[in-house]
Image (cartoon, rainbow, N blue to C red; front, top):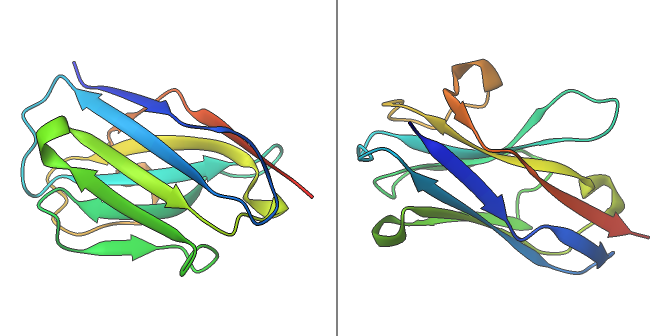
Length: 126
């Protein structure tokens, strides 16, 4: 049973930084797996943030976070990170870690993803 456990959320001021972590277990990860981050603000749809191929190649970002967020992974620790800099109030949301099995390339549609974490709250104050 795949488990994804997020951590690192919290309250930060505008312009601040946070690093989210997602510890994955229950699977021998394949080099073609894709790990992603989505977020959901109150009253809004869950939206794509970033994704990375497990082998460490391709990454994809939403336009709204390009240049501010960086996704990375540590294969030895089975952990994916989301470094978030220059945070804005509109980044406030619950952030979810997710796995797209054997995808080979990062995909932005949430329906492709097979497993989800419980989410971690990020709040950016103005």
